[in-house]
Amino acid sequence: MTEKTDPATVGAGLHYGLSFDAYRAVDAANASLLKQRTPAHMKAYLDGLLGKGATPAMVLGSLTHAMLFEPDTIDRDYAFAAVKDKKQAAWKAHVKANPDKQCLTETDRAHADEMVAAVRKDPVAQGYLEATGPAELTAIARDEDTGILCKGRFDKYIAPCEDPPIGIIPDYKTTTNAEEWAWRNKCKEFDHPFSAAFYIRLAEAITGCLHRFVWIVQETTPPYAVQCYYLEDESQAKGIERIDAALRNYKEGIETGNWPGYGGGLKAGGYPAWMLKQHE
Image (cartoon, rainbow, N blue to C red):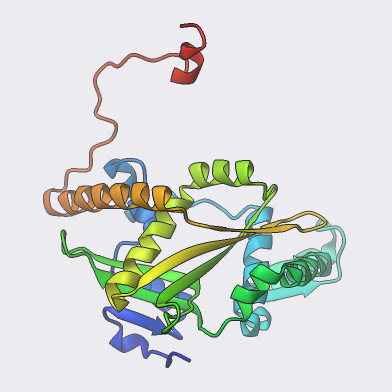
């Protein structure tokens, strides 16, 4: 097991035991910043202008994630009430009594419990979840080309061994449809391959060993079906290409104070290219 790290000594490397708050305090670029679609959006992210409230789906995903990877944080971070209607006075009293916790119902907890039970029945997912290695591992490395310090937080980290000498970074995601075509659409919508390639890059820069990134994807409705996917080579290569461009843009923004958007001017617009091709 990786030794826990004192937050006061955080530097380049792999760090186990950092709280999420301590991780956030590390002054380094993360994937969420770098995959913003323009430098102007990067600046808005840095200024805290892009935050939005968590949706019910996001809250459920976070709870299930905590149950899988940080079960000891449930009592600390969550408060559950046997209330069916959140319009009731009992719910308002529950929220008021737990101002520093995520307030949920016992029904929410039962929902997450069912999802956890289902994902653990999947042999591939369970293999990654039960493999030896720390959860919530912080990775910090400096990009060689730009000198930008980068950071990431892995759901789980399975270190390289002699056979095979490849590390694995499992990542848990919830969704409404875990079919391949649907997951590929989610990857495009949320740019998951960018983050996966970024994490691989961090791990390989620190350890000098090859790594593979695996998504454990689970549906949020019965039967809570699970499908695991690995980041394919083509998507990783595209992700690395985009990471390099993002780091250059970020460095230029930091050094010059110039954070351009889409380029301005007047451009042609209309139907998507695939629709136009149908009429050729």
